[in-house]
Image 1 (cartoon, one colour):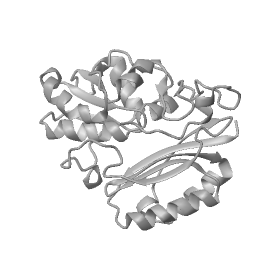
Image 2 (cartoon, rainbow, N blue to C red; image 1 turned 180 degrees about the horizontal axis):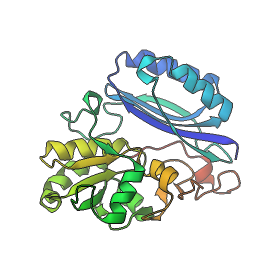
Image 3 (cartoon, rainbow, N blue to C red; image 1 turned 135 degrees about the vertical axis):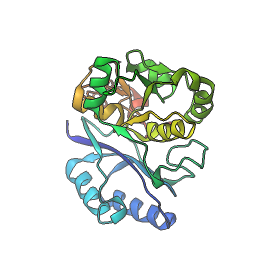
Length: 262
């Protein structure tokens, strides 16, 4: 496998978005990197693929900007690039929730790392003895591909449905420790903030999402695979893709352009 795939996001206050969009487009195109970058006032979200040297050269360039110097992408490998083109877009939000009061760039919700989350799942309670529930913040087609055993799944059609679902079900979370999770961390970060704003004090995000959990804990407590938004369609706990895009004859997989979660 010779193609390095990276995914990263950071909630950070950004200005001068058109100039940043132009600079990113030029830097990525010059290095032959494909994928999608979203920019908004609240931060950056990216899914990119190329050979390792090109990716690391781009990251070195990006980290010269102090706003991104601590960006820490998740990495996986594939036999071919899972994206067919490059897109750098400006959006109102890097992950749409439609709740302006939720501002991760002003301060994150508390997070738990993968090892802590696994220990809590092993024990069925947090370190203080409070019952723990895992709350899936992803869309229905993603949860159908795989999720943590006994996770709460509100059958969301899109992430903007999450706030109302939380308000409808908040009584079910009373007196529990809630750990939100998603693919890579971006949705569960906003979700945990919304839960806390709704008055549920013991809400945490799974730091780095399912993919970081796979890196640290493998498939423990997880059934199925993690849906990903590129031509691979899904990865198992070893980050092996469902679709071998280097050998597959599936034209749809070969032409994937890097969709992002709604």
